[in-house]
Amino acid sequence: MTRTRELLEAHLPRDPWWQTALDHLLPPRCVGCGRRGAEICQPCTTTLRTLGTGTCPRCSMPSPGGRICRRCVGRQSPLRAVLARYPFEGTIRSAILAFKYRGRTRLAPFLASALSGALVVRPITIDLVVPVPLSRDRLRARGFNQAELLARPLAREHGWSLGATMLSRVRETQQQTELPARERLRNVAGAFEVTDPSGVAGKRVLLVDDVCTTGATLAASALPLLEAGAEGVWGIVVARDMGGRQPRG
Image (cartoon, rainbow, N blue to C red):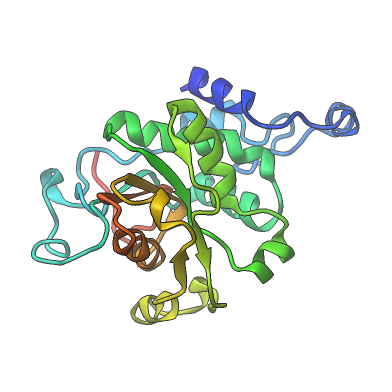
């Protein structure tokens, strides 16, 4: 995984000289333990728990024996599957929140390497990588789209095309974290549209986001891609919220 992270880091812009100098004077604190020296230290990295074989192959939620879970049996979804590397807990949760809400963008190589790790466990053939878009107002406030920062080096590493603007968010939505699970799908329904249908038709598309909680955002993003003629749509995230359930192995 170290080699994968090195490749991903090579595709990111270099830090300005003043940032490098500042890091020497005041090294960053690890998001896991607070120790100075790295965005996430090696001891914290080695304690991370990855999702093993005891998860559903469609939604990545806990499922005995890695069988399709009861929630997915007989259920129609615009997504062929949702791939994830980690449960949304502990150091991974801290890393994603720091990356997303506190501007710790130098966590991007580590988080993008998690996406590559999920693909090692479950290889798939992809033609186009598409990040889940932010609304214009949210992008302006945050300064970056965390999904695009993860999707860009992932696409380059695998030699896949990147459709950074292939999806757009056409209406403002309430923050999903503010809503109960049953209202999340309604909140994002019809919120996305494809900007260039000809670039999607016949393609196998990989949708990238940081976390999957209920899957509502990924599903709402996948629908217009399928309507534009995509052959199939998969979702991939760094972490899967287990909703209190514990994955096995």
